[in-house]
Amino acid sequence: MSVESAISAHAASGSEPPLVSGGAPLIGHAWNLVRDPLGFLAALRDHGDLVRIRLGPKTAYAVCDPELVGQLLRSPDYIVGGPLWDTLEVLLGKGVATSNGKVHRRQRRMMQPAFRPERIAGYAKVMEEEARMTAARWRPGDTVDVNAEMFRTAVRVVSRSLLEVDAISEKADRIADSLHTVFEGLYRRMVLSVGPLYRVPTQGNRRFQNALAELHVLVDEIIAEGRAAGADQDDLLAEMLRAHDESGRPLSDQEVHDHVISLVVAGAENIAATLAWTFHLLAEHPEQERRLVEEVNSVAPDREITFADLKDLPHTRNVVTEAMRIQPAAWIFTRRSVGETNLGGYRIPADADIVYSAYAMQRDPRSFEQHLAFDPDRWNPERAGDVPEFAMMPFGTGNRKCPGDHFSLAELAIILATVAPKWHLAPVAETDAETRIGITLQPKKLVLRAERR
Image (cartoon, rainbow, N blue to C red):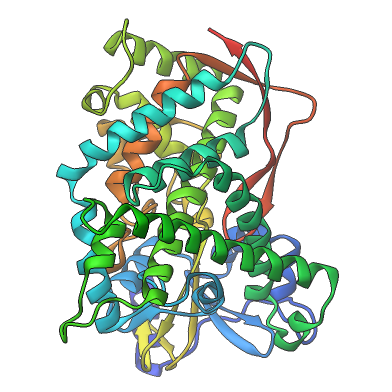
């Protein structure tokens, strides 16, 4: 039977996708997602383009084919929900990332003006300043905790550009420490749904709850500083403080809080992880680093790089894109079906949890030649067309595409193009580039030695 005939047969019969074998008693494949989540998810496509897995007593549907993921993300039959977003509500509340329907559309309309391309150039001034300050902090021979340095820089960028909060240095380290603890705890809560046990006052549960409370306190402090600056500021926080809904009511304090924590989490954690992985990959691939430095120096031989230069840095942009492909910070996503529907010729019941992994898709040999190789040139125009549609979409697609994609890409390129020509970061004995599993993927301990060029 041909593939087309098989799909038609599935559609006609309304059959379910194949169930992946294995799994532990009671908790099912949740054990695989705790023990080796990256390996487990990467192997799922060997069982089919759409498969069933068991998370405790509940069945989830894992979408492994890029075309089907594209359909999933663009279809109104599926909403933001499922284990990831249900879990993240503990942290993000009902902000733009976790809401649906009219609430989401209202929130997105409110935030979108802050991310228009014409405003990125203004934010880039902050990005350039913070990148130069980061590079100026180091001294030859310094041992640099790249994770911490990039997080501090990213928190300052998002706080100064979108929230216009300057006194952020001390908060950045506290946010980083708390967020890492929370993200590791949230991942376990996502894959192992044992609700009441997480309320038992164990050392781990207390550490998680304390870190979560600390994050919410820090965000309230940021908002208080924004309020003190006045509502006549031209930044996103000021716009939120001035905003009113259709009935003339202002946003509640909780709504403002939820929006700001979403901005800080997305604008700091994902950026910092991507930059840390990028510097690690460049340290492992000196030829790619040499080409990047030569490109930047050819564009700005005797001055600092600026936002206007980014259009002339194709290799730098390719390095960023390839780093996001091979080491994505945001790596696992979930959706929920609204009603009974059909995907890939299989029946999906109403209220079903659906999972897909950017990490698995972006390392799939069916989509990428030499899929594990760090090869920025694969994004040159003559080769990029060979990548299947939806196999690489670090900011999503459809009406849930990240509104800050241009902001993020500009920040990543500016920081990389500012720091790399000044410093070569070389691994030292303490370096542990194994992946730390949480809601995002981070190097466990990326400690590099700063060597002046």
